[in-house]
Amino acid sequence: MACSKDMAAMTKRSILPATLRATLATPALLLGGCMGTQNPGITSVHQPVVSRQDYALDVATAGGRLAPSEARRLSDWMNTMHLGFGDRVGVDAGGPIPVAARDEVAAVVASYGLLLSDDHPVTAAPVTPGTVRVVVSRMHARVPGCPDWSRDASHEFDANTSSNFGCAVNTNLAAMVARPGDLVRGVDHDPISDPVLTAKAIDAYRKKPATGAGALEQVSAKGGR
Image 1: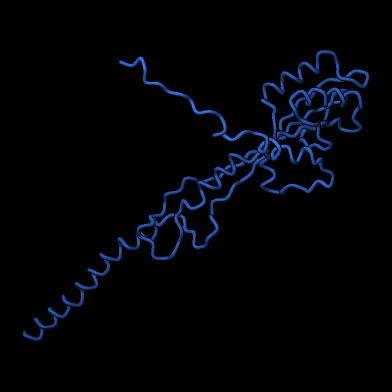
Image 2 (image 1 turned 45 degrees about the horizontal axis):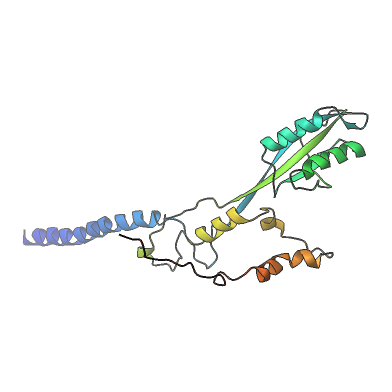
């Protein structure tokens, strides 16, 4: 009988610690599954992603030129598109492009401060004979997943950086870059450069008077009540 009691006591003592360990381990396992974005290095996992959309408009031609009122329709379409810096405009005729029609399209594009590109993206539908297709390519840069506060930095045991690390810098970079495509392929060096143009910003900076160069505003307390 005493032996049975001793065995029962030993069984309870051996079972209780195991049960307790399992109970304590459960929250730890759940916590490990909810640690959020891991970033063990010094390079942010949140990087800008560049996407491109192509918009096309077919304009009619007549005698190698744009048909009457087509230039106006093209200008209205570009105005609706808010065409501006960073957009790329090309012309596709499905073959040789009529020079006069191309020049007219280039003139409309120039009114928005842009140059007509020599190339154009491939579109899905074929170009209808007697028309030219004007294609506007527009790129956008964004940083998906930001802001990211999924990882609690106050309980960090694996030397990870914050889950939000890099979001501010890269999001601002994506928002401010003039040509998002430069984030993908960079900018080719132009062997021919105008020194006056390249020094324009520096020249303006040098010629601008210092903010403290003018006389200070005279403030009088006379006439106050």
